[in-house]
Image 1 (spheres, chains in turn red, cyan):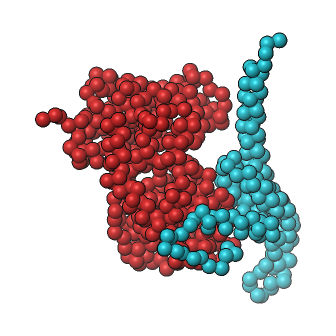
Image 2: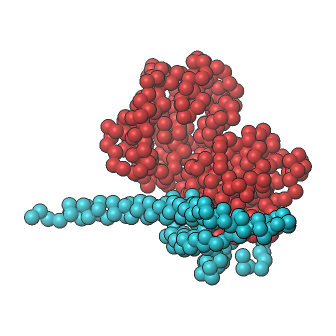
Image 3: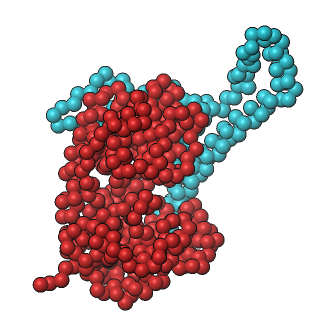
Length: 393
Length: 150
């Protein structure tokens, strides 16, 4: 009997706890699905948990987690943070950067010589090596070791880092790409002129769930309608924008609407809004889904998402979403699903939120449209079919 | 919105149409001056980075800023909640206020706020035009390469 295919995933962090981002969650979920199909899956990652310090917090070595062999390698020491920040600041300002300067930036980002050495000696044993997200040096250097069997799962955003020469080289050199949504694929095609035949839009499956919105409302004594945001609170995610918009919305319309937050990160709300914020911090998936189901709308003001698991979960919970129009991916999902609206500025946000509050039947219909969209496009069966297609190319 | 009601057919809702209706409504309301004020300009400072994708946004932002520029240093009233000796206490407070020039602090604080907003706007405009200039320079360089030598 032929042995099952052997796959390696490579990412700077492994999603095992609440402190990692969407890309890591996506990679782990895909790995788990392959394990369930009887494939042999190794996950090569570092010993770090914190993506700011990259401190080695986990013991190096192998651990079996949910059928995946997770191999932890130590992060290299001796990073020149000053050099890293200097180049990063210039990239952020869209200043002219030479290839050598880009390499200084990569070399002082997260790296693991131990992981690279393992890939050099053992990489040929894997049928495919899936790596992501694109922004980390670990992925950049690891992708050069066996490019002929490497598939990049980039989680690409339209940002200054995406235009670097070295990033372009990485995209061009690997054997294929797994994208989360069509706009992400189109952006990569536009930036790097890739061969569409080697690209596949895969995404992540969302497991169905049941919700109890009344239980959530009762537990937190919520009688007024609320807008929900789940995820990291930081400027890049648009959190300050949402806080200000909600504050002005309350003042201008006189409507008593609350803001419920789940997730982590500091934020600085307007003083008037403070009594109307319910900050739950980290919650269980069950609690989060209940909060989604009870919300008047889920608002995601970020313009830098390549997928957005939370808006798909909100739709599955039957709740419409409001997203920023400047992103490519989330308005695309809204159009395709008929489950959400996209705003460019405060006036549009005010009109949209007022509309959803005023017309519960519209809210319900949009939530139902979104739910059907997720059930059709992001059921695991559909995602697995797309993943298999990419892996068997 | 100006629309009285929404019809939801068997095929579900049409978010493209809803969004288009909302944009029309907002455009009309903006013309009528329904969305101006310092607080809007303050909120939109986080939205400036998205300027490049919306040409009309800058006009709206500048309009809000113009409203915010007019600082009225008399926009607050010195009051006394205690009924007894109220007129006397108010007069006392006013004297203190005048002596310590607290109004200058208020003026300064508001002016700082406006300056910050104007700075953000100018920086974004600068960034936007630098991008345009860069692409024009690249285009000129390409065209120059196509020119015959001499």
